[in-house]
Image 1: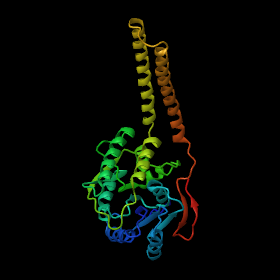
Image 2: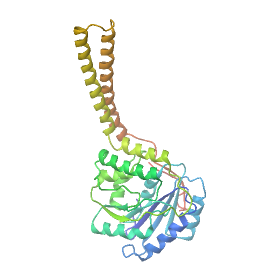
Image 3: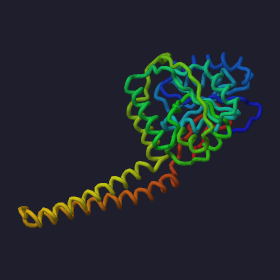
Image 4: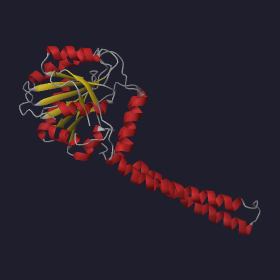
Length: 323
């Protein structure tokens, strides 16, 4: 992170397919943050264009040229929302960092509510939506994701993991110590602090255009959470191996009893089935144990860049690689 003690707030916005919304979002942020008693006008707006195929980057450059508080970053390749946030965190200089979506479904006027909770002493404050203006499958998927996160990452059951959040800069610095390519910001947050608050806010219709965050990206994000920040899936595999192995030994015992008492099975069938069941169960158990160790290696050793910066609106730095 860039250190500027006088800067109170950094707003980090991943942008993709937002050429029709980003200018209005910046305008509303300026109105809210200029009058906020915590910020006192000392803020910056960092917009990370995640290699959007439309004119999003052109609009960001226009905004940055006309507004000194706006800073733009263009990623050379699409990296995903959470990786784009890491690029923004690396540039953020505020004492508090607010993250939000680019479509105005998160209202800038709710930012002071998040900051009030931060002032009270919380490290992280999530916005908890009273309503959700998303497609039904997204609402159901979000609820499913939160339930799974509660199990995989020991998340408090009543905490909603929202992309609209306020984070103290110290936690952002801790998040930036993670160098793996498969970023899940909420998983990192839960690794560094449990001093987390929430505020109730409204969720609005998209200001313009249509969402490009489809089912494929949602599944990809879920897999990041499940495989990069928890070994529970591998442990479930081990448990499945134990159960199948146990069933194999049970069936083996029953087949032996049947062979000795009824003796109506074809010759060689019992021994073949016993071997398949027992060996198959033991193999699953062995794969689960090996997977446990491989999972730990996966969580420790990853070398692919989180993101690659192709251009920024700051003429002093035009190319930089994220690690």
